[in-house]
Structures are given as structure tokens and as C-alpha cells.
Length: 332
Ligand code: NAD
Image 1 (cartoon, helix red, strand yellow):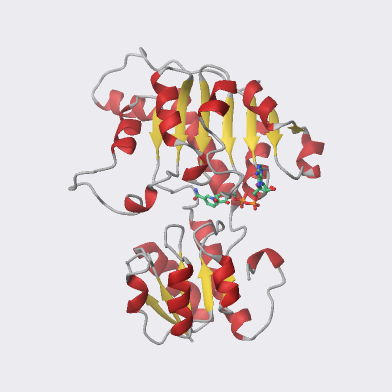
Image 2 (tube, protein in one colour; image 1 turned 30 degrees about the horizontal axis):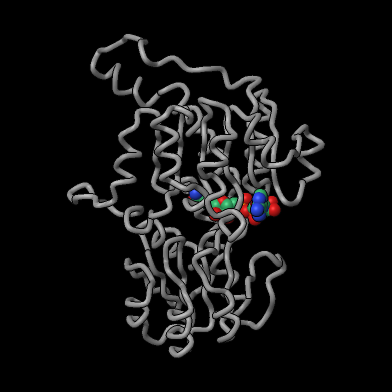
């Protein structure tokens, strides 16, 4: 049984090879992204393993089917980059890792909040230059602030618990309320009220037709002036141009993004010697109150170990024509 990995990084090889000692698959690691051009490099493989920026559209799936690939294994939770209808049409099984370590992403959202607020990144550089002044480092207490959470699934729920632990009022919007966190004190409100009342807004819903550009010029206008916006979910939840305008007119006080709508041309690559043609990301990175990380929220040892195990175990189960016990793993 051969699995071909696309967008494979050194850490993918390390963790998957280690985990594969108990599975014994033939693993092939390719650095290239899967798309309409690169799909043709596949030779005699049973499964492809893809990540967030691989483009698994209908054309790619048609070619995969022609090459007798029977499984697409996403080594991530989000699946907006895979045409599930096309996969169903060609009888290709699509699986994912629905929850590997929600705390990893939730904790990164907190890291972004604290960095933006307390400016530890600036303080680190400052003291190394023997500048011990505090000017420009003023923050605010997170304690008792109102935190708005959009999407309270695995990650949103973990994030709510962290923020409740910090003594915040946590309000949330989701199409399905979660009783467990409601009991803990999270208050579900309509989206409009969450946007209006929050000091910090954190996005944890998936990207789909309903949520694309959920943060746009109109919804930003509803927010408090000086609000902090955090996105560790998917880039296209935010209309980036609208957010740049809101940063320029100081409606938005802080922005922390681990994901970006056009990230597939940038993230997971070392472009330090290149000219970046994307003016929007360059503008974003020029603001002192913007923190960009390159889709690293999931990136903890525990999370990658779990991703590797769930992915290989799902492929094993599907090869045996069985159904994974956790229904959320199988998408087709
Ligand atoms: P999940 O499926 O457990 O939860 C998603 C929640 O969003 C659900 O409660 C769902 O009801 C809610 N939702 C769906 N549509 C909505 C809408 N229109 N408005 C409000 N809420 C809506 O998913 P999760 O594991 O919590 O992950 C959330 C997202 O985080 C993923 O879709 C993925 O895009 C992203 N993610 C990012 C990273 C990273 O490294 N940055 C890692 C993992 C996941």
C-alpha cells in the first residue's frame, strides 16, 4: 500500500515515518503542492495525503481516479480545498483529522492575543539593545474583557475554556450551541451582538459559503472601535482589503492572523530572498499592531503525533473496507 504525500515538509517526514513503524505503509514524500499540474507526477499509488493548500478540485480528482487512487487523506481538519462531490462521483474516499489537538490552535490564539496586547515581541528586541524604556509598550488587562467567539466546535470550545479561565466574559455565535460550555458560562448571542459587544473577537468556524468574508466592511462597522480581531481558522473568513482599511482608519485596534486568503503562494516556504508580489500581505505586515504567523497554530509535537496516527490509521481502516468509528473522519 503506497501513500504519496504532497506539500511534505521535513517535520511531516519525521513524524509520519516514526508513526509508520507500526503500520508499514510505503510512504513517498513530495515537496510540491498537489494541483492540476503536479497531479501527473503520481505513479502507482493507492492514496494521496494532502494538506491545507493543496488544490484538490474536480480536474485533479478526475486524474487521481484515472490513476486508480482510491483514498484522499487530509492531514488537517478543514476540507474546503477538496471537491467532495467530485470525489463521491469517482468513488474516492476522503478522510481527514477532525480533532487532533484543539488546544494547540486555541493556545496559539491566546499567544497572538498576548503578543499583540503586551507587545512581548517588541520588548524582546528592545532589551537586547539595552533599551529598557516602557514607552509604547502599554497593554490592557484581559481580565474581565468581553471575548467574542465565532464557531464553538472543538477549537472554539477549547478557546472559550481558556478565556473563561482568564476571568473574561465569553460570548459566542455558532449555528449549534454547545451545552457543555454554556454550563461553564459562555453566553450564545446572535452574530450582530457578538460583534457589537466584544473587545476581542476570535474566529473558529470553518470556511464555507456562509462564512466566506464573514468579516467584511459591514460587519467591521458593527464592532467596537479599537477591537482586537484574531483569525486562526481560514484566511477567507476575512475580507483582507476591508481589514486593511479598518486598520488604516483605526477602527480595528489589533489584528492577529495565522491564516491568510492568498496564503498558498506564501506560507510554508522560505521566501526571504524573494520579491513578494502580494501587496496586501506587505501592507498588513507594515502595521505595528498586526501580527502574522504562517499557519503554525496546529504546530505542536502532540498535534503532529496525533495527525500522523489518525491519518495512517484511517487509511488502514479504509483499505480494509471498514468505516472509521468516528464519523467525522470520513467525508465521502
Ligand atoms: P469544528 O468542526 O469542530 O467546529 C466548527 C464550528 O463552527 C462548529 O461548532 C460549527 O457548528 C460552527 N459553524 C459552522 N458554520 C458556522 C457559521 N456559519 N457560523 C458560525 N459557526 C459555524 O472545527 P474545529 O476543529 O474547531 O476547527 C475550526 C476551523 O479551524 C477548521 O475549519 C479549520 O479551518 C481551522 N483550523 C486551523 C488550524 C491552524 O493551524 N490554523 C488548525 C486546525 C483547524
